[in-house]
Length: 317
Image 1 (cartoon, rainbow, N blue to C red):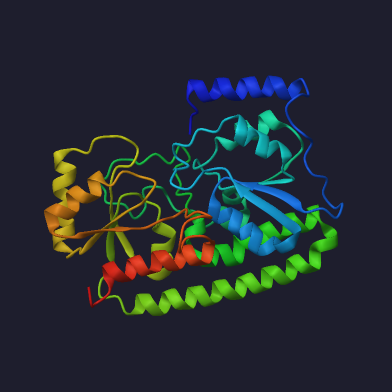
Image 2 (image 1 turned 180 degrees about the vertical axis):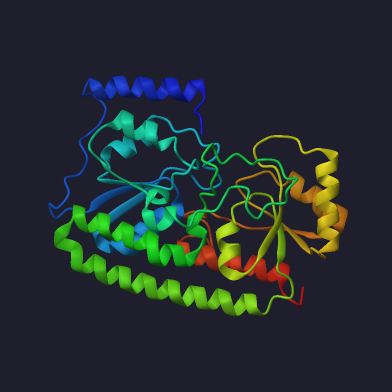
């Protein structure tokens, strides 16, 4: 994602201050018995880090609740956070690559963990167009051509993301390695229970097709046998009349009862489609937030979204 000229100027000015040695404290020294300072781009990643790291870590996320990583523009405050971190965790694949400018500007030797670059993740990435209605316009996942929303698959979190986080933390704090190992095992057990809960719920769904305002749910849909049949524009372009007609026809044909919208994006398109087909508009939230009720952690966030899928796709609705 390209930063605006203003954001670029801000980062450039901050870089000059760093070079002058007058803005930041050095990052925390790993392995010295202090907590590991971790910065992530997204809140779900910060919670995963805290679940795995336990008392050994302090984690914070850069993108605030209610904001989208697709349009977020970091400033000097975010640069300061990155400069003080021992570990920086981001998704990559075009979602939050603006963080690379922050890391380059900070230039403090912070360890970086690019999740989509992990071999066990990169081999499972989906196309950014896969699963979308063929007439849907592009929605702005950058130029990578892949869908970056990997954290919305609990099994990818259990088997790939959480272990990679644990490995990075153990390198930074070898004295906490055993505690981190135990935390990882506990969190993986909770993710296994979550996976089982989702499978049992999905087994009772009378419908498998759904429409969302944003193509964030391919990994979740693939894991649990659901089908994202249409994706609405989310990067500012105005959809054509033909696009709208085609999506409405698909919704009617497949008896869509709800259209999903995300709190980080405008609901206007979802509301228009819902009016045409007599459907409800329901929220799905891929990001959550520390202060958001029912979405203040990875596990409660995923259960919140499961309830929204149940409301839209179960027999009783």
